[in-house]
Length: 274
Ligand SMILES: [Fe+2]
Ligand SMILES: [Fe+2]
Image (cartoon, rainbow, N blue to C red; front, side):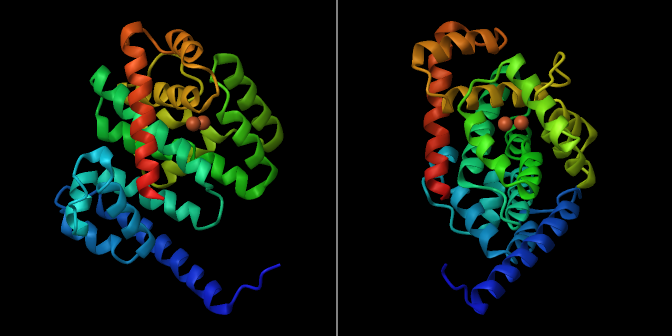
């Protein structure tokens, strides 16, 4: 086993402590109506990992900034405060070592897909994107308590989401841990003082009995699209499933374009971020 130096341990602790403080301060700062990008940048700048992530995301091809964003406050203005807050909270949870690159990949693909769906159905794109980044935060909590859970996540994400698989997954989690990841995630968002509508959207991202809101619809369908993209189904099969799983706001002719665009845009953001 590799020996870990005291310096490395201290560095890690410092980064974790910084993230914790930054996430906490950001939660209060972004709630204020009079806050500006420069003030948010001052808070973010205390966490080098977060600074790097915000800069990379703002310069990713997804935002079409052509890699020309050089200053932190400008990067924050490009992403919007909600997305910066989601990144800070995810980085904070990641500090306890429970968010894998595959988890990031799923969050980002869902966020990109939720943003695309939001555009089609007239929901707030930035809100849908930011919420989708955090929608599975409950999984990170379970994974930190039970390492074997992580292996099941890998298998789960390569299977399309259907009403039956979602029900099975939630009831298995409830049987094993007493709660499922969607309700754990909602509890965390509530403790971070997220708006009750967003908390409800996360609580019911696998149990959609009709849409609670447009943001909820964008999240649910964004998640389904992300699962379809990660599955090893061929294009024809995933289009057929998408036609069944997604409500009919996307015509069959548009489906191929939607799946292709989410695939390309999320892959490019992942490549730019890591
Ligand atoms: Fe989920
Ligand atoms: Fe998900």
